[in-house]
Length: 510
Image 1 (cartoon, rainbow, N blue to C red):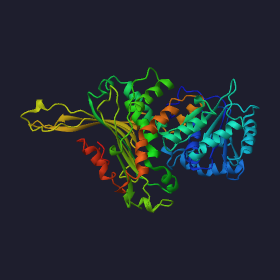
Image 2 (tube, one colour; image 1 turned 180 degrees about the vertical axis):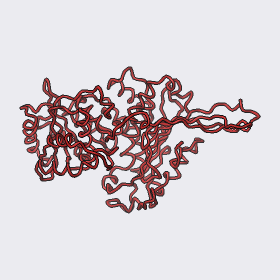
Image 3 (cartoon, rainbow, N blue to C red; image 1 turned 30 degrees about the vertical axis):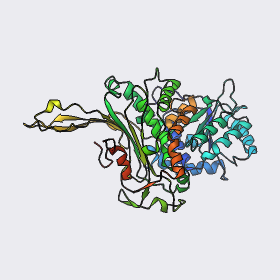
């Protein structure tokens, strides 16, 4: 959501946002800048407060001062990356003046009873009014925190008030743990109170996939196995683990990226047209894609681990040399998968997914390769092979859409050359920097779950990747080294080569 997207939107009803883990990086780098942007666009309730919760001892005044010092560098920075710009002091002062802080141990039931009183005091309502809880805490604390909220009566809805909980990823670490977590929290909350967040879906370019597919009669007739040869989905990062070794050792690239980020892109590309853009209509069609996808086979997967190298002219140490990483670690920092969808639209069309850290360039894209045209027309000419036809949805860093097709090269001989047509968002739409969390927080406040995952979707995603997790745990699918600054291990290239295909180059994107 940007200021232009905010036109016509109304502020949500009065509510209190309670952020657990409020002293962490997520709050300072993304959540508070997102709230600032919503305030700047006039999309915060008039009666709105923030209560930060963490174990650190400090007063509300200290917390406000800390936010004022740390958040400003991210407010006007695209994607939450530090950058300059002008902060509207009136908007910021109004927002930070609504911020309160309470320290406490979330394992202590007594703290939640005190928190209930704080919410009533801050909201000015005896029953606390509408409350949105944001769990920016370690994944292992999701279930216990929600249980404590329930025990304290903080999740009880009133006739005219709501209680909702935003849960960060990763939601579980495999299928059994996701099923258990769902079962545990559904003892306390109803499904319509749970907002499982994936910040990828807050990106305008990701939301535009459906608009592009279903709003244009030009492409939808071609969006099937009759015309598409295969699909590649890439989420490549140049950063390494960057001091998050402890988290990454317990998670890895597959858990961190595939069941959430990559599967969001996968389902948006492959879903059938919903009957409307209503939340359940959209989420039903996305779930159908996951249900039609057979579980991944270990032989159709590659796990990689970066070694020392150079990324963007900067030396990068071996993953095993990173802080809090075991010297014999088998955790993957790269994963590539081949998937298929057993339905009428996509039967026989492979989907290749890859994601990795410390790669040659930052790139998130969906690339659709169309089938080759017959070359019979060009008998007797110098044309020996078709020019590939690619439709590429570029999600970051240079948001846009490109179409590659063949055209005759000027001259007396019949030769085909590649032509690229590009659309860039920044050239056509006036957009303002955003973190990607604005739309998601706003939607949670108004109770729209379209961009959030349901329990059945989460579990369907884990089912697909579970055989890969099992093979890794059994030691039959080990990590393969790749040099930092490369496009991943050679075996990832072999995954496509055995099908007569190859990855799009990360060095140059046509």
